Image 1 (cartoon, helix red, strand yellow):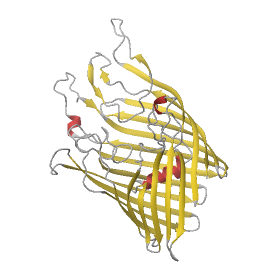
Image 2 (cartoon, helix red, strand yellow; image 1 turned 120 degrees about the vertical axis):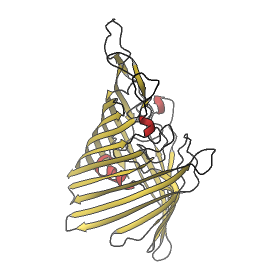
Image 3 (spheres, one colour; image 1 turned 60 degrees about the horizontal axis):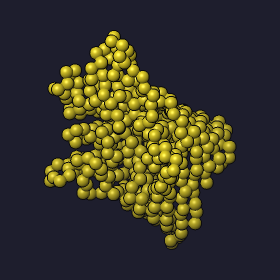
Image 4 (tube, helix red, strand yellow; image 1 turned 90 degrees about the vertical axis):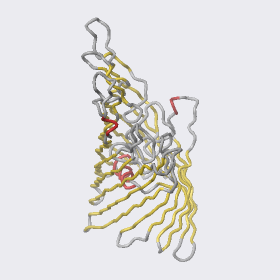
Amino acid sequence: MFTTGRISNFVSWSKGDGMPQATTYDPNTDMPLHQVKVGTGGTGPSDSSARPYRTLPNGMPSNKLVYSIDSMRIRSGFTGNVIGFGMRRSFGPDTKVTGYVSVTSVVDSQAQKKYFQNPPDVREGYLKIEGSWGSFLAGRAAVLFDRGAVTTDFLYLHGYGLGFPADLNSSGDFPTAGQIGFGVLANGYAAGFVYATPLIAGTQLSVGAYDPASLTGSDIERTRYPRGEFELTTDQQLGALIKLHIYFNGAFQANYKQNATDAIVKNLYGVGYGTRIELGRIFHIGAGGHWGRGLGLAYAGLSSDAVYDASDSLRFTNGYFVMGQVVLGPFDLNGGYGRTNVTMTTTDLTSDSNNPSGDPTYSWIKSQTGISGAIVFHAREWLHFDFDVFHADSQWDLGERQQINFYNAGTTITW
């Protein structure tokens, strides 16, 4: 029997631009131009201060408003608070069986309701059999698609930090996001079956069939078959000091239109790739990216306006990142950059004939760029102190923009 876990608490200060105004106004004529889809990207919702962009010649304030955010919260870290329970037994001379369950919770109040307790999330629960033939996992665990990118973020940047807090007003039962949404796509958790080959010259192939991810709330949320995923990894020692890890993974999911024949199908798919290089115990660097259709900003299968347009066409998304770490005794100096891009469809770019400005009806999220930095002090093997900063730059297709900084400090204990 064994147990693993971590508990963290952070103070997070958010300061910068508020979300763009839902209706964009011409700064010269004060006439409405188009609507802005603000519920998908950027940082919010949150209470914001507002001021008119200018005073009109007639002395009245402009309809165009400038929003700003200055907010402090108490939060969990990138992984949340996790406690895991496991059992491991031998089954024959070269086979072992492991059963594991983990529960995740967050300390920040949902919607800042001080009487509200976030329910625990039984995030993992699986049986794993391992032998000379490889391994087989059945149950709920972290999926394969873009697992390498999230692991890099954990190892080199936000493993003991907070990063991007996402929604400032409500935790939504989720931990904070680290670099996810800014060049990194979360792999998430799902129920499924996964087979991994034995290591051959440091190389391993894992293939999985998972409970299908439905784009809930859309017109194409119906599914038929399990979601297929894979990951190919290799670990190589180059000389006495250099360790190299390379990964390549992917996923495919067919989604069908509700209350229609199976002739209308939208295929969600993506690939992820990257590498990590460790030069001894001091210098570590990782880089990679992802691309595909219907992936959105956070994780594949999350329904949002970043995933599909008004005609249910899945958008193309790509992202890339680089992260580095310098280890100086008990201190880690970490830094990273990432960007996610969403490609507009023909429907998005079609002008609204009823709009005198000639703009399309909506302005959609186009990109999110994040720059991170962190200092971690490992006071003990089990006690860690972190100060990290995150600069988020979100841009919409028709010119709207939000820039906001996050300053986070906290501590984590692990076992």
